[in-house]
Image (tube, rainbow, N blue to C red; front, side, top):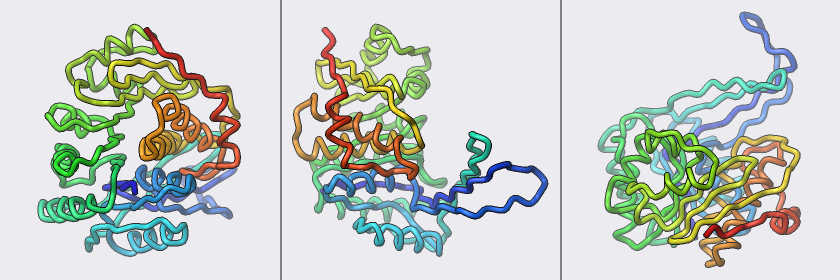
Length: 311
């Protein structure tokens, strides 16, 4: 079973408005509400791939109750740390081909709540063989909190896919306990290294030679519509994907993480791992819903992904 962690989940609310007017009343007929947060997108796609997953994180209030109800409706097993403070809403206003987002920051956790979650996390590791950790940390937790989770996982011998950015990711990479997989994009890679990284193979190889990445089994550098550059152990790969009609790109990175997790959980060979991850990412962009794929199209697009080994 895969454990999908979302430390700062939300209810994602989508308001499609033909013409968004400032300082005026905007009426919405079709509202979409989903249990949101990057890790919950991961859990949804893993479920659609018919692999067992358990969603966890920190939830509170009526919004937290709604998230659990939505997960239960989708038959996604879940076991969250419950707190009294209210979880957050994240609003996306879709207008004139643009997307304006209003994101609540969510609850501020205490040190005691952080400790309580680490204890729950350690208990849940007894039920799983792989962990995904996705997204931002809630306020109040130390910036090295993901590193603390990695230390707990490593003690139990459970590999971790970490999909985060900024200081929480940097702190995780500075310690001895490294994630099994990371999935930065080129911008995040440049921020981590405090240097300009571009899409050329030589630039990417030079970036990944940095000491920061030593000991990480899989580094998947997401390149959007250009596919990915991947380092797996001593091997480098260039993964290319076909041109597709994009309906909604939001959550495609989470779907990629889900594909990685499922393929690794099934002990697939390296090429199949990469093709699966790229396929689930593509399929998400082809659906209106976030963290949603149509598995009937999986084989068709899997066969269109190309993996080239770089000498």
